Length: 359
Ligand code: DP6
Image (cartoon, rainbow, N blue to C red; front, side, top):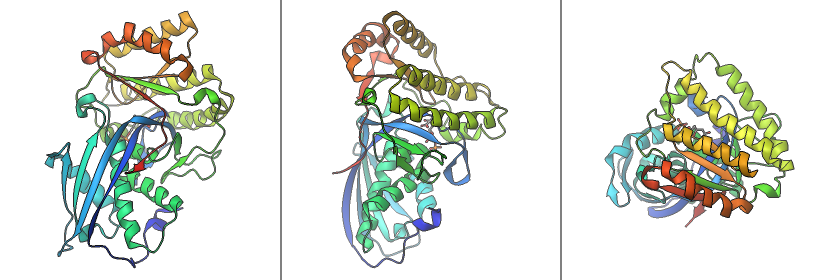
């Protein structure tokens, strides 16, 4: 596929107004995307677990307008008008206009809400951009003669990527790969694809408890963060390592070898942070409590033989990953030993999920 193939043929249908509502989840990367080229092309392939409960629901209402000169839209978060969200959406619309030529023909009302608190420090860009991309695809579906389910999802993922890279991994589940990788047929830099190989029972219903260590605004925006990989002294080695980790995770997911899984996932998380610590300017995005939690997890694993592990995004919060059969024991541990390190004791229990839904 090339980007050109997502430019639609002249529309044959027409629609005056209507609305669509999609819910789309967040995702957590196992092999991380960190570093991109122009047009949201990732420097390396990544793979993520789709989440189940952390999600955004977006209702897109549209009505035909007279002038086709500009984009016209309004945004609401939890029923409150959010003009500060507009620049990001305007940028998104500009990036996708060539692929959705109807955008300037309608006025849009975008009403969105998240299941997780806005101020939780959990990025809503993946779930938010994927939900919006899906709503826009539903509008396009009204205007074209036919579109296969496969192309619908592929193009929605392609559009979501242009909003936020990791968003292209949120549409399906339970594992999604984004970025060209030799061992994964059909993988693409342009959109996410469902992980095509066998996955061991051990990963079924895998749990992710998100410990909210720091609920503040991100210290470094992802755009700034990705840019720091340009000219980074270790960037090329990092991209090679991510490619290798993606090769390795294929046999890990098949065999269900949780020790190798833990080593790969924790190394990925720490490498992501090491990249930020060694860029110029440099950043430490972990907080003291992030480290306290990591050390407690390591001690618990050592003492009990549990297969608990952690991963991190570009922030201080900790995603605690563990197999479903350990749920009771690990939740007990989290409540008794880790919650004290969370801001106001807040955490979110989530698990692997299966992607977006049309409501
Ligand atoms: C650390 O997808 O937020 O979560 O493409 O600039 O919107 P943009 O970046 P974004 O980056 C996410 C990076 C990460 C790792 C990952 O999800 O793979």
